[in-house]
Image (cartoon, rainbow, N blue to C red; front, side, top):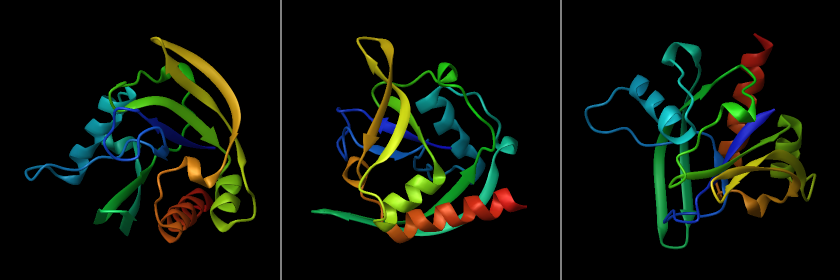
Length: 161
């Protein structure tokens, strides 16, 4: 299973869409390892950088109307199940967490499926509301398909080690 976060409706870019989990930008003075703060800030999970497995740096280009975002992303994998109860979300940023099967996500990206099942929760009126649903590709932040497929390939490579 892979986790996606549901972006808050108050976000300027891509409000209400599912996105990769715990993403952020480093400040000028920060090292890659300092990015672990995003996991705690957004998801409330107290992890150490050493618990993450590096999947490498990937070039990404996200273009949506006037928004052009070109960057290198350092991608990491946490190889453990995290129960939904463990998440404590920063609601200004994230209002839900959903899990989907890796094969399903890949099939959705490649167009083999129109929608995939997800399980998770969203915060409504300060409480977690658990949901099982189906989502289409349009429910996700429009990352390049090639970028997402590279992430999936690297996850699979790591899990085979």
